[in-house]
Image (cartoon, rainbow, N blue to C red; front, side, top):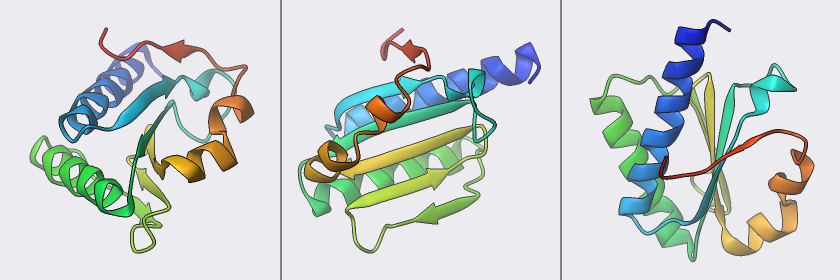
Length: 120
């Protein structure tokens, strides 16, 4: 990954976190997984308190990121609204219902990766 590509991915992760906050997403966390994995450069992990809120967050993210010129490569789990994955290549967004987030605990799984403070 070049520095420019890394900066763009970081900006996308931060932008997505801000957009999710507009829909009252719970506890957004950005994890820099690119230092320890080839899956992506960053994961954005956040929660909604209900399936309806998870859908609202995802709809908002997909609409606004598309308007900003970002291409959604893959979406999984939207219909169920339990754990939705929005794959933007360098950034993968995980939108959980709170109970699913606690069950899967991705933050623990990726605990060796650096965490980026949301809002910086």
